[in-house]
Structures are given as C-alpha cells and as structure tokens.
Length: 213
Image (cartoon, rainbow, N blue to C red; front, side, top):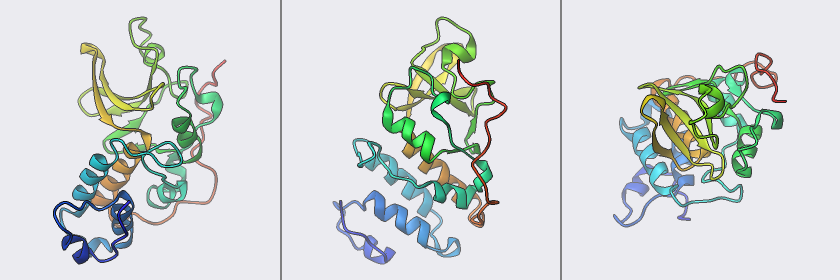
C-alpha cells in the first residue's frame, strides 16, 4: 500500500505511475471540507476506488473495511439497515459478505440503490419473482434505475445487476464494501452537508419482514 497523503498538492505531484491507495482516497474524501473539494474530486475518488479494489482484499476478506459509524454519521443511524443471521438465505455462503451485512449494514435508500421492500429480508431472485427459472444463488438487495435489481452472488460476494425481463446479468462492483463506499461517496457529492448523526438507537428495524423458517 502506498503511503498516506494528507496534502492534495502532494498527491498531484506524484509521478504518473503512482496511484494513491484506497486508504488515501478515503482519508482525503472524509477530511477535506466540501467547499474546498474540487468539482471532480469525489467522482475521481470513486473511479479510483473501483479500479484499485478489483483484486484487493483486506483482513475482512473484502476490498474495504468500512465502519458502521461512518454510514450512521452521514446517512443517519435510523437509515442504516443491519441484518441478522436469520435474514440470510442458505445460498449466501460468502462469510465476508454476511459479516459486512450484519456488522456494517447498508443505507436503506441511497441513490441509485433502494433496498428491497419484500416481506422477507434478502430474498433470492427465485423467491422474489416466484420464478423457478430465476437463479437461486443470486440474492436481491434492492432496485436500481432502469428496472434492474442489485444482487449478490451468494458464493463469491460479487455485486451484479439483474434485468429480469431479459434475464441479463452484468457486474456492478467487486463486493458489498465497494458498493457501499460508492453509495457513500455519491451521497456526499449530492448532499455534502448531510453529516449530522442520526438519533441514538439501534439500526433500522426489520419487524415488517417475515423471518425465514
């Protein structure tokens, strides 16, 4: 991993072959005031994140280690959904993904992803569409623009898009941590002032969903 850069001018002075680390991107994005950030800073950090994280793994088994408090601070604690083991379908066997969904969670409504409103949490595509032909190893997270679903490959943890009418599957992000980091960066780009913590308490309740048998 490259060394940290606290001064953006230092980062700009790097040789073209040097790429700032994910930690550098995250640190600069979170510490700089929104008014002083360049117009293209967050998109550049986002693109850098996705490029650098393709084959990157931390001790957690994912590309990034994102704390729950980061999401709770910027989205509001009550708007972060953390799942329980009973919410996971049997096909979700990728343990780093299970741990992230349980410990860190996901924002319930952060452009462009809106978490699903199914009766059960994290349904497979087979369960959601009640279609025997839909892949049972793909778990639906929620909806995306263009009539597409964001899904998790339960075996690898890869995030993909699924268009049910055409049964088209496309890669989206390497894993759930990079998906969440993308949503967080986009949120800061659109609403940089939205950094006040939400009310104290547990994460968003899941009482409206039916526990798996």
